[in-house]
Length: 479
Ligand code: ADP
Image (tube, rainbow, N blue to C red; front, side, top):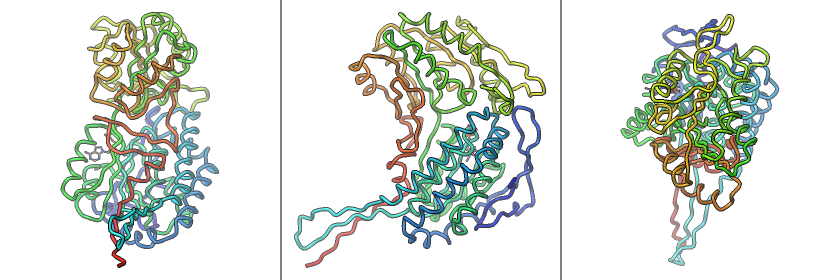
């Protein structure tokens, strides 16, 4: 298991010699002691990335594609090892971690191809003596700050487009889950990336490390996935050197079920969207809005399905819901349940912590709350836990008003059989992603990202590579 930072093609301990401990949130078992890098280590990584940039930028896209594709293959070769590491670090069930590894590899594979299609343009000039061209060029060193909830996929979702575009990169993974990023770093050496093209700095002091991304002109792009609170801090910091930022921030996804929906499919979708990673994803359904005609039946079926979920250590066979990542996470989930109950909601299943033999006290019973109203905490804030609050609505416009009544705008879900309504809703929902009768819309070839307080920019698809490219307009007088 790799525990040192990757700088300039070599694994090195932190200059200070310090390390920090990474725990399994399910058991508190120590997984490893990892290099506690600081600003000086981050600067060394940025310098290495800057040195590697000219050659990487000038390499043919088909050459850049080779190590990217090779890395995807190596990740799939080592899928079981990566799956286990991911589950240990963030607590998610093995089955989900295995899906994450494949999803993560898909970004490398897809961008290995997309990098070959970074075309320029010629523009018809008004002056016949001129030729007008547009070049699309990699912007420079890219930095990435990744979260703990997808410790593998959030690295490759930023690595694929950055490196395919011709940028070099420094990644700072979340302090809870640095080992997955270091495992990718180790495979990147085997994949054949030149030294300095991809660097990883692990460390506890996120502000000190990430300040180095903004304090000069070398890093030209910072991609962040995490909380809206931290995203705002980074956006403010980006002003000093006008660094481009992509922010994938918090969500508060409405999951809207109309009377004419296929209820079986809606319940299956609700389960997949809500309880994946114990509710700890930014696109997890956070608020269920169910039309009154099917409300009671939906709550009944959802309650039966949720009550059957198996809670446990993510690495134990059959586990479907693991622990929350830390104590703050479970306290927040409990607080949302307590607030809902205090204001008149009812628990139809779950509602409290679960004891898992040999486990920590971070396991929350998968919970359904009915009788929820939009003023309750769980309908105003992202819960990031396995709590499904259900609120009844009457009309399409009521549903829209509740769904859009939040500063967040990442993902929304819609279950109905009425085509005209689908189009009306899709157009009116203030969200970057809409799943129509589909609870799992994320895929490498489509743009992922939000509006309002959910972020700036997009990851995935041909849109995702644009974040790493600068346009250069050339006006060429030929006569
Ligand atoms: P979460 O609340 O989901 O843990 P955070 O936004 O706190 O999300 O963390 C996401 C990433 O941002 C992690 O890599 C973390 O280390 C980093 N981070 C946290 N606080 C700061 C900060 N003040 N400045 C820069 N990065 C930060």
